[in-house]
Image 1 (tube, rainbow, N blue to C red):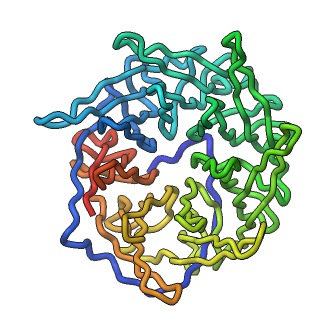
Image 2: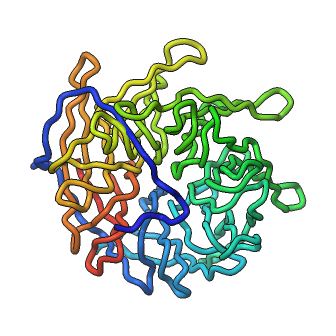
Image 3: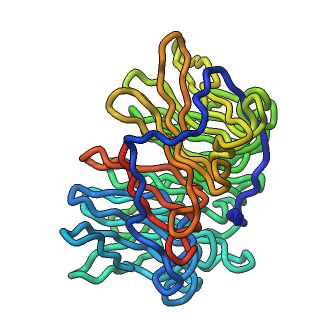
Length: 407
């Protein structure tokens, strides 16, 4: 099993609930809608994004015309899905190895990051933030920032967040003033140039270290995200950034993971529900040390209460989640695990049963080719309630797959 080389995974988690073991729910279906192959891109370590027309966008870390990864589009047709490579990276000044997918703006432009290439002084390049613009059916790539490996950071492998003004926010896991990663903002000037500002440099102390691979959430003008390490107990943090009147940003740790049986190493993005609760996963920790699902609930202004909703178990259960969660219309949570099940990871469902308790069900155990294998990312829900996700292996060629999951 292959992990991204630019992130180092450590450990811990916690639990509290009833468990419904593995057995896949009979009402659900999981179908591979695209199998990656080297020429068109491989190793799909990508979150997916959908647009209003039902198209799906994502990235592959490897493959394509130059072997350095791609941005792709899947378009629905009456006879199936049509795959188009929008851009192939060269690992030159344009970047290479684009992890975790793209973000679509209101005009249909795509923004993303690549962990190598660019013009920085790191071995193999320090990575870039890029924009793809559709010009008459041809997609034009523009590097809006090339990381230097200095105070700005390096190796950015997380999806970016956009605000209504077109500003771009993201995280780099390394570099920065303390060498432990940064949170940055990229702003376009009136003359068209792009400028990066570091709004926080991780110190490895109570603020955490190494921003996670999950896209930050912009909510009520505040940014929320996770750092995979550091914090008071060295097991990672969830944080909030709030803009001050002078245009600066105040960073605040809202929770420090404690290690087993609490969570540890929060790798994926955060999910907010309608009343402001936060949900996420940790790669390690939980009661059994192999991952957890947690909830953070606001209890007073600026204060949060954390609880572990589920601790993954040995055996046929999944384990080691590094993904975000998604919710259906009745409050169930769905996510993926990178391992466990039949050995290639799972899709799981958490259902609330009252009294703060949740039941877990494995609704799909990935089997490997021609099924998907090793889900390093969560899923996205389209306007019709369909769920889509990607796996880094599996599919017809074992080069990765995109699947559709119907709850």
